[in-house]
Length: 552
Image (cartoon, rainbow, N blue to C red; front, top):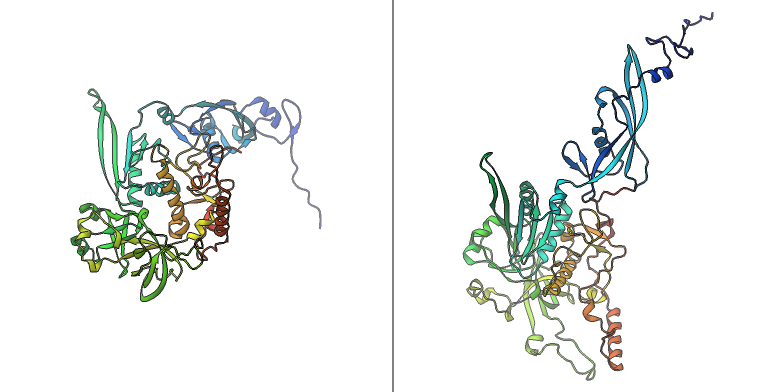
């Protein structure tokens, strides 16, 4: 083939330096064009960004404060908003230049383009330095002052324990409902949540109504008014009362209301509490769901709580064939735990009862339960001893004796596992932060019980019962977040009671020491229950706060 030469490329000399270049409208090379025309003119090379050290948020112009990660796209967008003159050029690329984590400066590299002459586009890369100025956002400024909250949510429950608020705290942490809360204060029968805006308080009230059965009412207080502009300043208070019925409580429904609830037996157990609570008749497996609106029309209280449960030993189980969901009806024979416990102190032939009234302690009770699917002969169950109980309730007194069982079993227990006193490999988060902690949540024991005082021991016992309930109930564990505990040692609340000695310890005889050592060896040799619902690693989250944004 014959070679065909391409078209000739005509070149001219640069008007300033004389370098051969392709002809353009300016007849200047790129270097001389940059020296002649500065496309970054009007864009400041150094500026500042506002940062609140208390809440770790950046000011996003004009007035919003945003929580962003270091060197993130969101922070880059905030930095670019602070620049003036970017609307006159075309921004093609922007990224952060690495600086020390403790540095109070941010460096950003920008690549821009601009048409300087006819059909001549010039591109330039330059660097901008941002000085991080520490300031205080309006929300933190209100926190520093006193009585600056605008809305208050008072959550109350008239019960003798704090387990409901321990569970409610975990629900708040899981759903992030505490992010707008200014502060939390513990009150006598509940908690107080403070907010800087009324809408945040209304949002919390709606959240509480979705997770627990409540009734609420609001009020407002006039602080100041301006007659010229017609504006007024108010403080809003919302009172939220939780139904005083908890899981595993013994409930006696008024007979008239029981007939309205599908004619269920008045003597029932509370098996679930959500935005409504569910009652179960253990003898017939009949259930009824009571919403908060229905309950508050004719409120009633529980007869007994879990603190009044008695430990029983299952002697025989005979399923009756009735099955409803996970409940299986069964006829069981039980005796009080320890009724037939033998002791060798007086010889192997002697049997010593653990109860003063031997007639009651050795008696075998027949009852019907809903736990036929999980109970086996030899197991230990917790229940209410109704034949020995004395309730101050007109509704319970009106029931015929034929409809009141001697024993009402509530749940299966695992005493052998509790004797082991194993350290838990998980822990919970709290909406209250300890000193030195960062982020939205803390790793402390909880916001409930920080007031101290005479009820501190009672709160510790409620917290231990709540942890045990989480261990034994997989369905309850699924509603909260459990975190892997690496160095935390979470023992039972009774550890300090069991341990003796120290500087003010009492002297004991050698025989007592040997007896205690033998008792400890017996406890260690006890076999654990095979069906104990252990907390698996798949249920645990990593031990970090998702809301904590920290530069690495």
